[in-house]
Structures are given as structure tokens and as C-alpha cells.
Length: 60
Image (cartoon, rainbow, N blue to C red; front, side, top):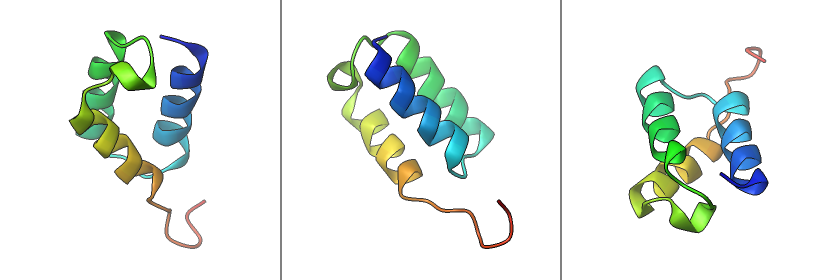
């Protein structure tokens, strides 16, 4: 996995609300990926959806 992909996924999973199941799915897909472009389209969509989420005010 290249540095950019690692950084993007780390931010998505660490800075946004994500369920345990979503985390497992993203990590499993990322283990076989080298770059963002090598991720399956459904995983890219899931990561974009996660990145668009915010924590409710007061929970950060």
C-alpha cells in the first residue's frame, strides 16, 4: 500500500464516524491494494461516504 492510500484510509477511519463492520471491510480491501485506484469501486464509494460524515457537536 502506498503512502497516500495509507494516509487517506487512516484519516477516514480515524477522524470520522465509522462502524466496526465498515472498518473491517475497508481494512480487508486495503490489504490487497497498492493505490487508491486499485481499490474496488464499492470500497472507494464507502470511503468517500465515511469521509463526508462528521461527529455530532460535542462528541469530539
